[in-house]
Length: 169
Ligand code: CO
Image (cartoon, rainbow, N blue to C red; front, side, top):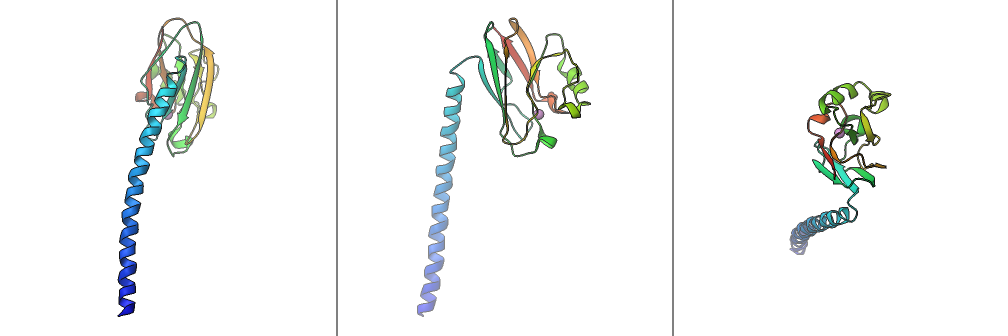
């Protein structure tokens, strides 16, 4: 009988532990949410200091970036996914005005050895290197003339979704 009680006791303890585990999960979710809020606040410190993320769902977290003219621009690209750069690579490519995202994207897909930047291209104002899971790439360049420019990820097939407007005010 004692043994039976011990076994029952052990089973009961397991339930209690599982219950506790569940609560911890909830706490973690709450923490993640707070962290995201903090990041957003930091991004606004310097308007020409831009942080953009790319994920495993082939998406940037921004479709519009606004900067001020006559200053340096700093772009920090973070890959927040888990996939390798060979299958879910991301870069940030800012195109000169008049260059279309689709024609550049199509051309770039042939340049896998150059991280999908056409060699000797004159279509690009600035670009980061190609990155994969957990990596970060930062570039700095002078803001171009006021106007609207296109940016994209030039990894094959990504430009259809991974693109946006870069507005210099
Ligand atoms: Co990409």
